[in-house]
Amino acid sequence: MLDTFREVVTPEGVVLQLRAAGPVPRALAWLIDVAIRMGVLVAAGSVFAVLGRAGAGFYLIALFLVWWFYPVVFEVLWKGCTPGKRALNLRVISGNGGPLGWQAAFTRDLLRVVDMLPLFYATGLVSCLLDPWGRRLGDMVANTLVVHDAPPRALVEATAAPPIASTVVLRQHEQAALIAFAERGPRQSLARQIELANLAEPLTGLRGEAGVHQLYGLANGLLGRNE
Amino acid sequence: MKQELFVQRYRHEWDAFEHWLNVRGESAKDARSTRRQWHGLGDTEIPARFRRLCQQLALARRRGYSPVLVERLQLLMQRGHTLLYRTPAPRWRRLAMFLLAGFPRLVREERFCMTLSALLFWLPLAAIFIATQYRPELSSALFDASTLHKFEAMYDPHDAAHALGRGSETDLAMFGFYIWNNISIGFKTFASGLVAGIGAVIVLLTNGVMIGGVAGHLQAIGSGDPFWRFVAGHSPFELTAIVIAGGAGLRLGLNLMAPGQRRRVDALIDGGRRGALLCAGVLVMLLIAAFIEAFWSSIGWMPAGVKYSVSALLWLSVGWWLWRGGRNAAFDGTAGEGATR
Image (tube, rainbow over all chains, first blue to last red; front, side, top):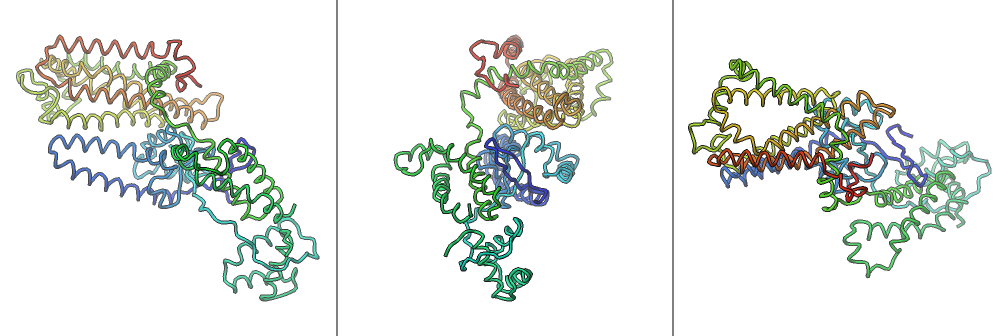
């Protein structure tokens, strides 16, 4: 298992695996957010400029809101994503795997001040690199985590092939490897499938396409398919 | 049990659960309004179905079923977890309760840090103020000449038509400025407390010295009257809010250095939780202060008596609020935030 996984045991007693995000995608997401914030402020500036002196007041209020509350509002109301994070498939969640609340979102936003010290998020970057789950200081204090959002995938059917009962007793991880091959193989090119199946020659005694089909058959036998 | 049989047996349950999540799990509002049209899995069944799913996931992992199946179950379980363990939506009533009761309670719970913060702010302020009365040249050591000149122009006692405490800006522009500037300072005071409390100490000391210096200088050169008339109105909220933000920062720094019988990260999480709640209160206090400062404090013609009586009233109410707020039996157990440890 990759070590950026954070495993959280839920009250139901099952382990929830969270894929923590590293500094690079987070920095890219931040850049997108900065661009959006600048855009909003420039637009607000040109609109409020029409209002003359009072406009300056509205502009400063807009600056205050965009500066301090842009991440909070998006992260809470949009399931932990700011537009930048959505673009990079990231999501902020609570450290226990649950969704982010107002309080935690506000805390991690306030502590951005410390993470930005002394320049360009240097503190945040160091903390992100040292922490096993890539958290910046604000994440630690707010008990939050930035994770990669797993794209929903449909249940892939293993390829149809007549099930074959294995004559050799396969160990658990060998069975898992066979089934994984049967599920992922069809998404790869035939040459790659053959290359992989050739590795299993000692088991199947076959090379080439025949070996691939033999492996699919064995996997279906393991899965318990009967025709 | 072979995987294929397992999938065959439970697949319809997973599909039903997923369908429910897709249709009814997204928004509570939509779910309420489309209650009658829905004929799938009942809402009350969901927690039980979720626990069942968790058990099936555990079984699938234990039996070494294929990664694709385990991943699908985990994804469903994660979506269910996100839905069932979400934090309740904020309610206006709760917010009002927090401001009236929870916040003062929280401030009183942190009385040690708050006292420390108040001392760090008020002692240098008073010391510099008194010192400049005896040695007026001290102010030129604190501020350069152009800054001093600007302050003098802002509080010129001979220019009665002039709005107090500002150049030519309008009330609204200043309102925006106070919101941006003062609230940002309040938030930064809290956050910089994470640097072992040093940040908060520095902010408190410099603010104390600056405010004391300006007040002392203006008093010494005889511009005291417009200055006091200007600051009297908003100072109860603004100065108290800065002290509270500093106290929250000190609490965070102290939790970092002396976590007690907790893991350091747990102590920090607790400090951060309290700090965020205190900052929410500070935000409201500074909003009130900005409003008063922009639209009331600057009125030049208002007689000093009125301004000072209003100021005294505000100081008393802030003090009363922080001292007595949330002590009423009616708030017991309901205010929540400040009371739970």
